[in-house]
Amino acid sequence: MSTSHVTTHVLDTASGRPAAGVPVILQEPDGERWVRLAEGLTDADGRIKELGPERLASGTYRLVFDTGKYFAANGTQAFFPEVALTFSLAESEAHYHVPLLLSPFAYSTYRGS
Image (cartoon, rainbow, N blue to C red; front, side, top):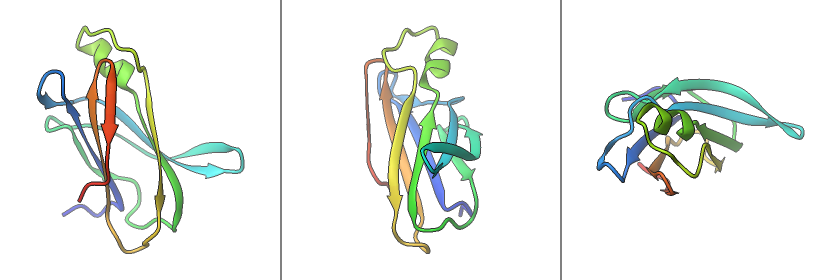
């Protein structure tokens, strides 16, 4: 079980495989800019199980996925060089899992479990 409040999982839907090696940054707002709280790299299963602190205050946060670096490393041209997902943490005791389904020309996300 993860001790991180926020985790993620990236699946490359074009290849039908986990997206290993995707750099991800967890950010929080500070006035009109975003500041880095934590960063990680997806493992062979496309997951980051330890991303950021064990607890975060309720509020708005953002995960930024460097999809351009991932696709370039795999020799694939992609339309979206970066995916930024902004979400609200409402429950201080809940776990937040934010998966990303990715292809070179589209992406989708949802709140996972």
